[in-house]
Image (cartoon, rainbow, N blue to C red; front, side, top):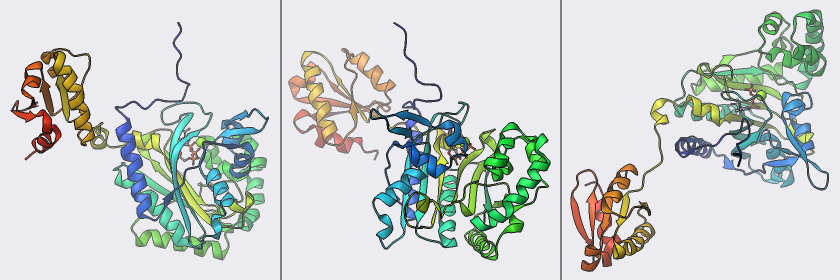
Length: 422
Ligand code: ATP
Ligand code: MG
């Protein structure tokens, strides 16, 4: 029969990798908790209009990357391509704005985008993200950026750069947009196909294009920074001063843009030089207009999302060696009575809190001991018919080969103290 394979760009995480992933996730959770964020679990799928309206029709995600399908009643549903849309929907739906303290959430889990799979770019990938609602204050931006920076640095990821830009307010961009469009039209012939299309659909995104010809053309283009209001400048100056005060290094990047109106002021991205073409580890920014766009009350908001695959790729070797914890005791029950007693012993040890395993295919002591070695157990509990007849078992230290008799009637009580290293 033909073998059924997994989907292109959708990976399995094998037991050799999951401990590393858990380490990353737990570290991110721990930091987020330290910064006063609480976990929110949002669904994997939502109505398509949620993403179309929140991510924006003229973005790569909505134009060509969403996994959209019809439910049985004809409703269009989409597998979440990111976490902000669902978070905002939940925030509005559960009236979280009525709670008189800032709502600060984190989430983690799989996201889905139909992209061309390559290293660091998958169709099912994983993000860890945070969103902070209710505070129109530079300190909220600083807090979110600091958390992002601490998570990545604490994991020991090498050569990270925090890039940051000021998108100003809608009115600032409205003043800038026609000037930029005029400039881009003048240079249209040299731009890539995507960017030609972006001039009308989403002109600011041309600045973000990675195609070298486009970058050359946009280098001398008029800059948004010359169109910012005093308020926007002062807000951003506070964000930068705060980052300096807490010693988080940043680089200004005027190309960092998000072409949608509900994004404003602070926008940032963390990149890593050793990731190759997919060099973004995480990105975020302020999006004060989105809650209103999705039908809620006007609510200031700021957040970020990081890609866990890219973090896993960057983890230093010292962390890459994190592997699953091995069971402590191997139970070797052999012979007719021994194998029956082995089953009871195995269960008793587990219930008493000791991790214990056995390979039920092994029937001889020799075979059992070989498996105990392969499974890297520190101890083996030997139980043959002779031992059962005497009411004992032999606890063997697999390394030193030292052996101790223990009473079967007080098994876990006698085994436990023998397991401690002293
Ligand atoms: P990129 O420029 O790499 O396409 P993006 O702007 O689409 O990134 P965001 O939507 O900002 O990415 O998502 C935040 C993070 O999620 C990215 O910085 C990246 O680490 C990760 N990410 C995004 N898309 C993918 C993917 N298809 N596979 C793996 N990780 C991804
Ligand atoms: Mg993308």
